[in-house]
Image 1: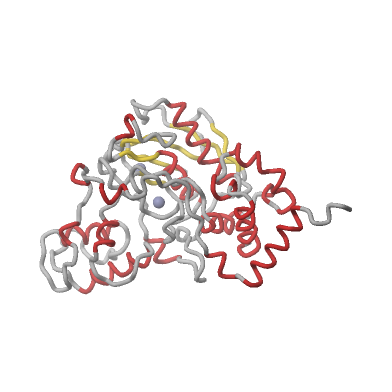
Image 2: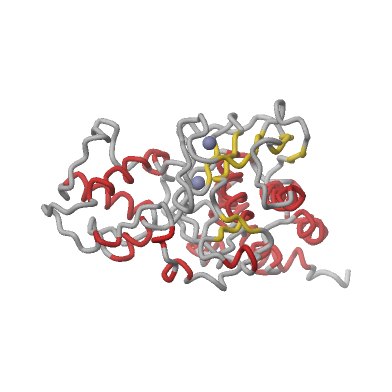
Length: 366
Ligand SMILES: [Zn+2]
Ligand SMILES: [Zn+2]
C-alpha cells in the first residue's frame, strides 16, 4: 500500500480542485505547437496571390461609396454572412447597414472585437487564406454555453460506424510531392482525431468504395465550390456522410514543417495543418471561433497548427464520445501509443497539464 498517492490519485485530486474552484479554467486556451512563423501573415506579400486584397478598404465608413466594397460583399456572401435573399451578382460599392451587420457577425464568429467597422485587424483576416467551407453553420449552430467555441453542420450529422476507410485519388494528386509523404501526413492527421474518439481510420487503395476520398483539385472541379488559385481558399471537405476532402492543387504545399526549399515560398502552406482541419469537417465539426483551435476557419501560410485544442476535443467528444483508451485509468499506459498514433503533440504530450485539461474536458462535456 505504499502507492496510495498514485499518479491516478494525484490527477483525480487535481481535477476535483480544478472543477470545483476553477470552472472557467476549461475555457483556457492551449497554445498551439509551433509558431515560429506566426507573424508571417503580416509580412507576406499577398499581391502575388489571386486572393482578395481588401487593404484599401481599411477604415471605410458606413455610407461611403468605395470601389471594392462590392467585392467584400461577395466575399461575405460566399462564406454565409450575407443571406441568399440578397442578389450576389448585383452588389453595390456602397457600405450600407447590411454590410455593417455582416461585418459584425464575421467579427463575432472569428473571435474579433465586434465593431461592425473595417478596422485593420478585420480587413487583414478577411484578406488571409482560409478554409473554403462556409461559416453558415457558425451562425445557426453556435454552442449555447459560453465557454465552447466549436460548432457543427446543420442537423449535426455524424458517421454511425466506428471504422472509416480513406483513399487518395490516383488522378488528382500533386506532381511535385511524393505520395508516400502525403500518406504519412494524413496518417498522422487522422491519428490525432482517432486518439480522442472511438473511431478508427484505415487506408485503402480502393478510391471508389472508400468512405473518405482525398484529392488535390484545381479551379472548378465539379462540386460547385471551385478553387481560386494561390492562397484564398486552401481546401474544403464535406459533412458526414459525404466523405470528400479536396485540397487546392494550386497551393505550394509543404510537409513536415519544411519551410525551406520549396517551402521557402512566401505562400507555402503546411499540408498537415490543413489536413487535420479538414478531417474535422469530415467528422462533422464546423468552424470554431477560438483562434487557437484547429477548426478556426483561417489558416496562416508558413505556419504549422496541428494540435487539437480543448475546444476541438470537446466538440468532437460531444459528437462521438471518448476513445476508451483516454479514460482515467488508461492514461499512463496509453501515453506512448498516443504519441505513436500522432495525437496532438502539445495537447497530450504536454504531460501532466495536458492530461488534466483532457480530463476536465471529459468530465464537463460528455
Ligand atoms: Zn474549415
Ligand atoms: Zn471540391
